Image (cartoon, rainbow, N blue to C red):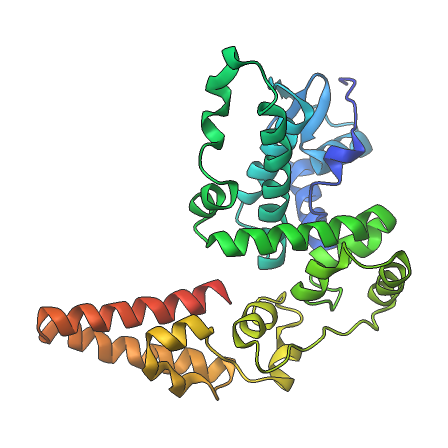
Length: 303
């Protein structure tokens, strides 16, 4: 069996599989073997850690492929892109990887800015502001990218002190809000350690936003992992972002609705809006379509 190097820094970038998923993967490999080769860089494993563990455990042969990268930072970027390209990430993990991508991209950009002029072609990628470029890549807003960057910093701080607590947070079991994670990297060690203890023993509670900050409440609570979203709904009302309320005055009808009510109301408006688009004039059709798109975007980004 091939000798493979395990780099903990690379390995910790990958989300752990839950017990059932790992068990299903193991049963599949035992029955069919390893379908996809493991990916290496300079002999270091960068993709396929779970497959590698299973193969070692059962002495199952496997194949590898090797990729070339300019630096360790470029390997990390590849790992992040490889993870975000998969469909089994929860919304919390998606935000984490987008934030990691932003923070690492800024590091790489700083290195490129110090390269000789004869390598200026390498800096072409960074002519567009990082947040805007990644916002286009991930189909979110630039503001979401910068928020995700702070969230990733907070999760990284947790992981440096307790990998177990980090795993719970990424699995949606940490009961900590996005805003609390975004603030965590600037808090004291005492506060961080206390937060980690509460995450591990399950006593941490997500802090509620003040009613005045409506857009932040929506982004924070509605974007909690699926395991925690019921807790957010039980004590706060589902509200549209302030910018959406300003642009579409009629959206005030949604302000007092629960999540289920919000979805139901949008579904009704989609049906009515389609009739307007089909039978109305061009101006009314465009207005109706813009309203529908706006409402659906809000729902999509906060489910």
